[in-house]
Image (cartoon, rainbow, N blue to C red):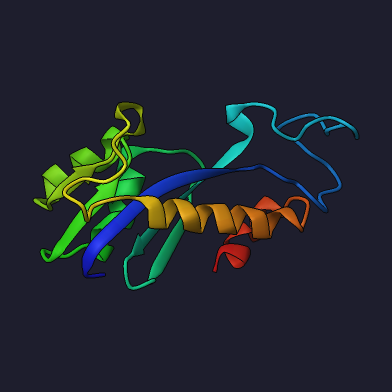
Length: 148
C-alpha cells in the first residue's frame, strides 16, 4: 500500500450458526438482542488506502502484537498512517518509523491538514455492515469469506 493508509477496527457479534453443541457459552434464545457483551464480539481490523486497496484481518482478541504483525507487511516508508485515537496504531507507527496522523472525534477534529482523515474507512465499514445485515448474522467461522 502506498500514499495515505487508513486503519480502523470494527466488531461483529459472534455467531455459532450451524453448531449443534456449544461449549463456551449457553445458546441464545429467540427474541433477545444479539448485542450481548464485549466478550461475544469478534474484532476485525480493516486497512484501506486511498486507491481502494483493502486488507482485513479477523482476530480472536485485540492484542498489540497481533495488530502489529498484521500491519507490518502492508506498510512501507512512503505511507502516512491515519487512524482513530487507539494507541495501538500510535505505538506501531513509532516502532516502524512511519508518519502517523491521529484523528480524534472527541476533539471535533475530523480532518487534519485538509487531507488526512478516516472518513473513507468509516464509510467502507458502514457499507460493509449494512451489506452484512441482510444475512442476519454470519457464522464466525465463515466471517473471513464474507470480508474477502
